[in-house]
Length: 241
Figure 1 (cartoon, rainbow, N blue to C red):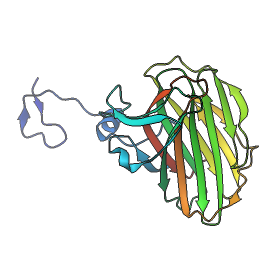
Figure 2: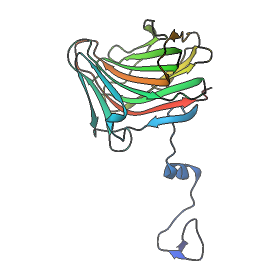
Figure 3: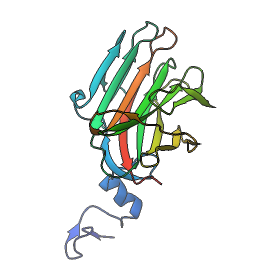
Figure 4: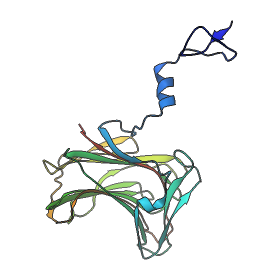
């Protein structure tokens, strides 16, 4: 059977057999940007295929950051955060973004745990020029515990035991959603499991720090052993339900 050129005309013949495209095939070819959670409107994302200088880096005690081609989440590379062996070493990467006018926003990160030691921390802050709300998720990947800190001045609370997968190049997801209008947290998602945070206040502090959303990711050494993570992608969403 002779097939004609796809999508254009039935007049000219083609030597390459083709089939009709279904919706999933069209989506794959378009390659639309979508976060793992899928809720909320995409405002910004970084697939880690650019240069590191788009982020601000901070090292506490000892640590390093780099671009790696070892098993990227997508494309050709990922960003790597690694601490030194000294206890309480921290390697951070941060991004300042314009927050927009939608109060309910979410930050989602895809990362790989490479050594099964230490903690991966995601910090999320919304600032409007006069006050700032901040919260953090700390994933203790060695002891399988999720901690949540709802405020600038707060402490980390144990919110769940979570059986993290053994260290590998398999990627995990973590997400935080905040309602800056009501100053309340909405939910967290860790490795596909959703945790209700609606009882936690995102109590603001007075801070003339500018009008921005701040995202910080960190590798934290909690047991005097090196911890290492690949960051594969980061997403900022608004209009979160």
